[in-house]
Image (cartoon, rainbow, N blue to C red; front, side, top):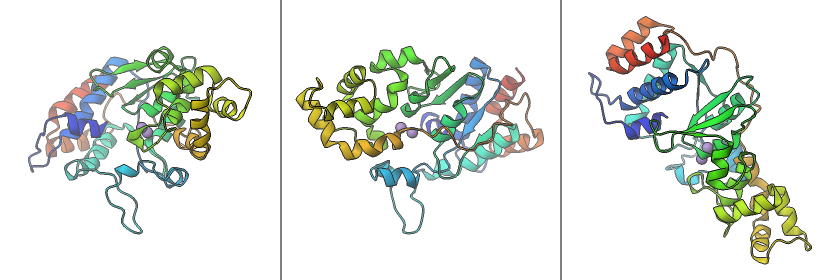
Length: 293
Ligand code: MN
Ligand code: MN
């Protein structure tokens, strides 16, 4: 969300000349969504590792195009422009001053933190994200939906099972298999060559899940046509590992306490100081008023 704010909000300079657009934009996004949905709990899920080694080992192309430089002995780095990078610690400090929980896990992406917190949460969960990967978590019965901000926070879509079915022609529980078959260039996920959205959806409608599709390709008596059959067979190595790359973790050891949405800032003095130093007055005012609700 702060990436989105950085690219979507005009530059605004703090007194020392630092651009604080991502900080201000993020606070405004949170205020808007909290005002609209009035959640009881709120967790900002952090990418402790945006490209975990265990995913790359399974699939070396995973997010490979997002690596700009690989320094020997150092972690791979994602392109975080300097003017955004300097805002990240400020974001952390402001969230801490509010008492808004930040949750991350070493060696895991925010996706995995989200997957874990959204699973067996004991309450309905809205996942706010611009990442389609999280559609795999959508579950009407469990009350899990995605507020998809791909086209902007102000124009977010409420993704439930009907939405996924309408958009992709598969059930939400089939979305991960669908993404595996189709691939996703934004994540360096190749998919099965020659299998696009339409074919992936029709295969899953017919054979239910990836295991069913693979079994049909191997079964000489199945009614799977010769074209898709060959494509699936040729992609056997990819299909053996990709599901584990695509599936978000749901069983990380994470704190479930302390995620309540604060009604007032936890540390008002620190918040006031941050607000003055970084010229956050109006977004801080807005968010504080919304929290007091
Ligand atoms: Mn993705
Ligand atoms: Mn993702």
